[in-house]
Length: 366
Figure 1 (cartoon, rainbow, N blue to C red):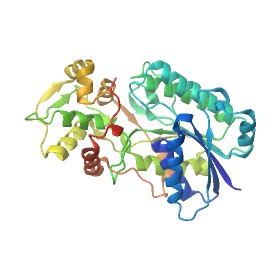
Figure 2: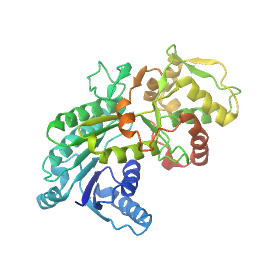
Figure 3: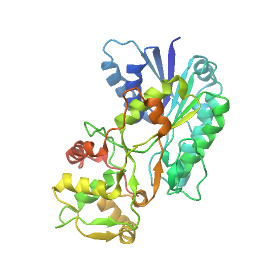
Figure 4: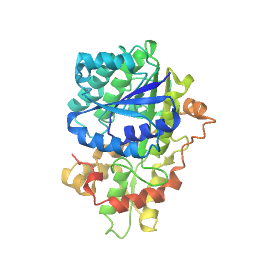
């Protein structure tokens, strides 16, 4: 049977890279429908051409469908809806707001209401083989200790609106597992490619590089001290893409939730040391109390100058550890393993230094 894919989140970086990987793995796919916002049409068409140029003769038909997950029926006509729901075999829902500083209302509309609309639409597909939903490991919120893949527990609090709305959205998808063949993907903090360093924006761990770069005039680079020694789960995008493509097609992946996280994450202090060492061939010296850092980052001009979102600091004091036993078990034998973060630091820093002054890679600091 031919496989016919439907993607949300295109032409975003994760979705377009995932399509490339799936085309390498799934010989049965012959058509891919892409739900695209009207203002993303030009970018989407350019990305499709790039993918087609890389196919080496493989025949796959791409079709853009204008729509919007924040609207009922994904803002598609009844005729288009019925046509697609009779054809689609695999749905990949990646559209979301991934910004840690996203305002609550926007996050609610896109992440929660959007997922609710996609869920309702998916229930009408007659030949669905798999619905792959892209969540985040950080649905755990402020829960700490060992965090397991089978858990979806409401925490006492969340670090930001992004986490809270992704939790609410995953609850909706989890409830659908009894009706639909679902696989839920929970990545850690995604960083650039482990070999090339390529990324699409300098957020997450790149805030530390922004901070160090903007303060390069200092004679030394002090640690941002916390009384709590923590690990930070940073995962290269190539691992996320390869593992997602494999697990989305893995026959025993139905009904499962996977942590695509680093099984051996680095401590926050080690990450800082690695960055300082790669940038300046020095070791950090001295300490700035976390409370002082948080106070400075509460001042918007300071945040803007340093290129750091204040929400990012909490990930360097939070003491959660993601258990990824199920993902590791089901990936065993596939050849897909999470690269060592330490080995990817040189490529990560090199890419950052090359493109740090290009606006397209920087995010707007609120």
